[in-house]
Amino acid sequence: MKLIDGKKISNEVKQEIAAEVEQMRQAGGKAPHLAAMIVGHDGASETYVAAKVKACEVVGFQSSEFRFEEDITEAELLEKIREINEDDSIDGLIVQLPLPKHISETRVIETIAPEKDVDGFHPMNVGKMVASLPTYLPATPAGIVELLKRYEIETSGKNCVVLGRSNIVGTPMSVLMSRKSAYGDCTVTLCHSRTKNIGEITRQADIVIVALGKKEFLTGDMVKEGAVIIDVGIHRVKSDKTKSGWKLLGDVNFDEVAPKASFITPVPGGVGPMTIVSLLQNTLLAAKKEIYL
Image (cartoon, rainbow, N blue to C red; front, side, top):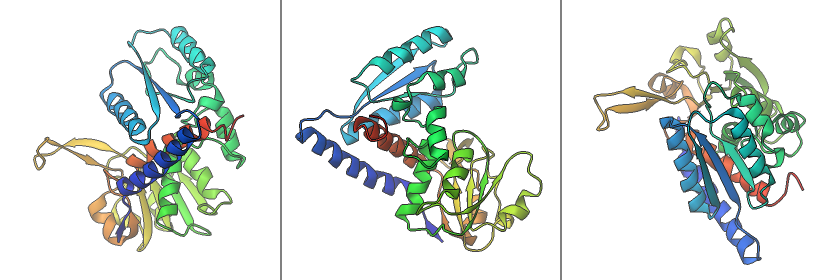
């Protein structure tokens, strides 16, 4: 069993991005600029936005934060997004999800200009992904593909099972793994909450990508020997064995599954660090006008 070290790979990619940003500056260009919007005071969202800001500093990006109270109206938020769309100094815009119930996530995503949608959620960018055209890929799926690439994990002709069909991870992940590409070309099965006999399906898989949001869902009896296991889940649970009183678990029962796996991502330190790196890569593409002129 080999551990896929997302932290190590993310640091390598950040160094590569930082070197490219330095070249852009030396050539007289400006540093890429990422803007983040956050509504309310959700703890997980605060942590994630802080991590994005720190990552921007590490690679030499400019970053801006726009914070709003939870009672902001949808119309006011959409107007602010339109302002940023028109601001040529900002290359990429992310709106941190989830949003308060009175604000439509769909309307927010569709209001972000496709050329600034570095999360890769706008329908235009999703459509380009499905058509295998150059675009901003959703951050977590793109990060997973990067891990497969850096660890030179063979995917062509393999059976890949994706657990979970969210628009953010599961569905785009199934598209990327089936595409005709160096780290795609899989035969993909997408399972979800209505799928029957999931264990029978996962036992046939060479690669299992778990993004169900259910703590330790994938157990040892659900995987075959030598499978590649990618765990997207993250759950904070109480623990009397840690100083903080908490520990993080994934969607995979690591202790049961790891001995059977050829490669496996840990939680934390696996997929998580790659999500932010993918966001930085998309912002760099936006700044270089490589997707949209």
